[in-house]
Length: 189
Image (cartoon, rainbow, N blue to C red; front, side):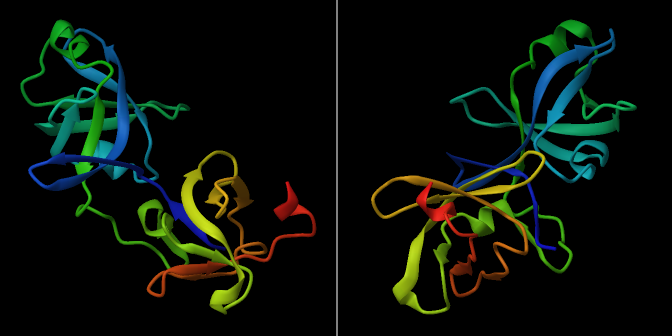
């Protein structure tokens, strides 16, 4: 089954580098500078493997931080992380609301049939392998219980297509298109 390994696609012009938003700092955890992060990534190592990460206030330049440790809260989708130099609750609280970023070049290896969100956005959605039956262009992916491709039609209308093998049986990333086989009536919604 095709699946999307998602890191949110977030781009900013800072030192000519593109960024992936992998989470948001939502709260301080305890008194010693740990932070709770709501993930926007399917890769837990983004929050558990030590190394450089970047934090960014909306509209500001990303600031490099060194992730020293991280763990997932049992039974929750939240991660608790620690950054070098953040060693008090007040220092942690000052970071709440910031986006946790990694470089676009820091992309984990994917399994066969998996795709990064950034690789799908911009692909043409076609009803057959010919160029003459283009439905629109993939403009976004909505993650939830099931992934949905948002396709922008030539007239500007948005169409949501479930990203499942039965409806999107082929992705031709190198050629810039994907095949959709929607059930009757889906394109008229």
